[in-house]
Image 1 (tube, rainbow, N blue to C red):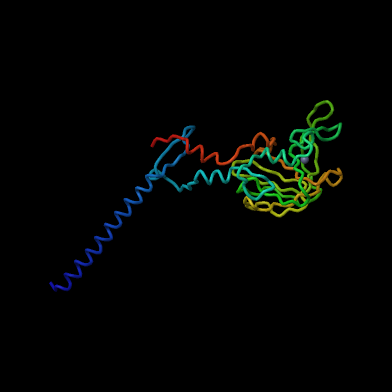
Image 2: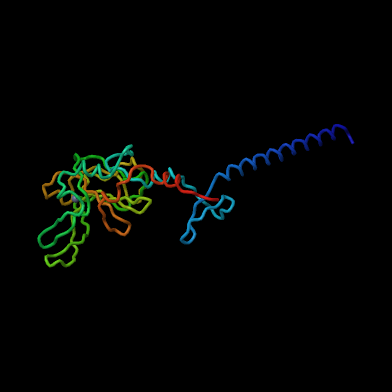
Length: 257
Ligand SMILES: [Zn+2]
């Protein structure tokens, strides 16, 4: 055999060997990395923990920090999270009359009483309003200053009925954990139904539309919070936590693999 060909063969074999060894080293390295990864899932009613090599279908991993970012709530008047923020502080700060502007106070006429299903935040006319979380989808928009919505009411005998209320221009946003926020009496609407919005998206500007046009009340943001089924709630009792709840939970969760 020609000695030159022999050297070529040896050289090719050495190169192949180097490739195989470096691949093995790389695989070991990646396996070590994957061992650091635990997947928390639910199976029936119980929590299960498994390793990445047991994953059967496409899986998108969300870090606790990410989950916190997209499910924590912030002020509708601020594009960013304040460092020491509580929803109740905001409510106390912008509400002028605690017997009228809070959630649950009585409204309507003698014949048809109803519950005030939002909070009234008195800010200057044309103040920008933002989503309550860093991610949401616009599920309803009205650019009509006389837009009507149906609401529950009670007649003098206490019998349940429905009544139409002039909301005016509004935007409704749905968040990843199933809450919606509705911004009412706006002067300007800046988004469309189906838009994906971030924490700093300007949804619209506060104003004087709907029943504010005739009531003589000052411009304010009427903000409603509702569950996915449409039931409203008092934001003071739901949006009161501060900071990184999920990160703290995962830190304290003891996981045995
Ligand atoms: Zn109101």
